[in-house]
Amino acid sequence: MQLDPIAEIGNKRAMTEPAPRPKALRSPRGGRTTEIDWSDGHKGVYPHMILRGYCPCAGCQGHEGTIAFIEPSDAQLQLDDIEKVGNYALALRWFDGHDTGIYSYRYLRALCHCEACVPEGTASRAPRQRL
Ligand SMILES: [Zn+2]
Ligand SMILES: [Zn+2]
Image (cartoon, rainbow, N blue to C red; front, side, top):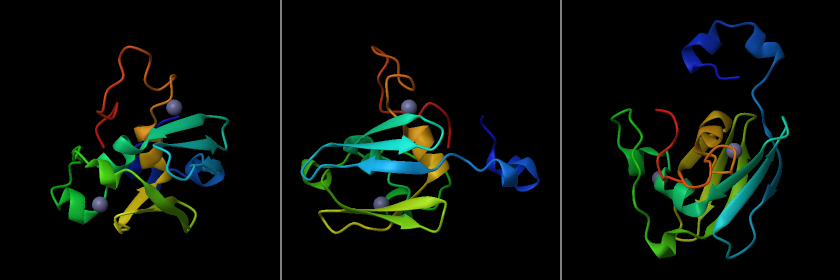
């Protein structure tokens, strides 16, 4: 189910059918990929290159309103910590100290790079939809 955020605000169903949320999170120390099990059964795969490259914070993305891929350096690909923000987002802290990126669950779903979301052979750094 895909809802655009504006439609969702006026959509009462959205209140009884909340967006999928992370149930379990695997991000091994020193790893380059984080996996998220979602409440709807989806097994999300998130290469850190994607997570960091699409960091949604204003420092990375500016205030243009469009999200761009910012090529991270190798040293920027290690995750230090992941924290829940309310019931709608995760805050990612990277080893280089960058911790201003708040990734809403909806945003994370759009960034998913599992085989179902990014069929083999078409793997791309670009999100599959405009954000
Ligand atoms: Zn950032
Ligand atoms: Zn996926």
